[in-house]
Amino acid sequence: MTHEILVIPGDGIGQEVVPAAVRVLQAVEADLAFVEGEAGDHVAAETGEPLPQEIRERAAEADATLFGAAGDSAADVVLPLREVVGSFANVRPARAYPGVDALKPETDLVFVRENTEGVYSGIESEIAEGVTTLTRVITERASRRIAEFGFEHAAENGYENVTVAHKANVMRVTDGLFLETAEAVAAKRGADYDTALMDALAMHVIMHPEDYGVVICPNLAGDVLSDLAAGLVGGLGLLPSANVGPDNAMFEPVHGTAPDIAGQGIANPSATILSAAMLLEHLGYDDEGQRVRAAVEGVLADGPRTPDLGGEATTGDVTDAVIDRL
Ligand code: GGG
Image (tube, rainbow, N blue to C red; front, side, top):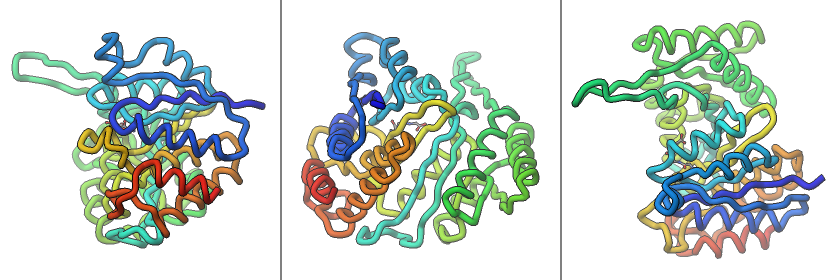
């Protein structure tokens, strides 16, 4: 059965790393058909609408979406795309790879980020001049769903440590519910877990990443903590992600548009190629996904490397090397 993949490069280096990942997907033996769609700041500039209705519909209908990055229009592109594919879990693995100069080579953890609510619910307003408000939505349903997903992800992927990140000592009602719900899920499963205040967790992850496996987080905390963990393993060029729902999913690098290097052909495609590996596994191409991951790991170990990892290679050089290994 052919799987239809909607490919949305987006803005900035998304235009470079997404085509690189598509080349890799075309190099493996998987029955995939690619449909290209455009969204982001450049589409907004041309049409006034960063995410055209047609692209929303295609994302809903496709078997999976591969997305790059969005700039100023992120809230109007990434968040609705995650919603139209019905995703609720943003899975962000942060691993140190042999050969990459990592601050903490022992890092191997996965942020399981709730991606439908929290402070990213989009309920913001200016209630008077110079006075703005933001409503933080936390529901029992979404908290239970992400906790169940996180504990299941840990069990299926062999992670012994599960940590629930929260700030329930300050956000007593909202994170109180998030924490209480996650603890109830753990109790029902008979699962071991820790809880951690997200600020203290940020410090402890930097000092002792080896103490963590799966970290279940509310939305903003997951966004921030995963970027922090990227700093432990060699940078944002290495972190893939999957936005997973019951029937559909979208895959994207954790990084954004990187305007400082966009257009130079030197962006590290590893995060997007690793996201493509997650896409393959999601569609049941487990061997192919493993092969892509192994090929990326081989290139990270032996080169060529893009400038963010201390090399001089281009996006194309790295992609060619990954495909050669496949
Ligand atoms: N590929 C990730 C991306 O486009 N990042 C821009 C951004 O601001 N994302 C917010 C988020 O991941 O929730």
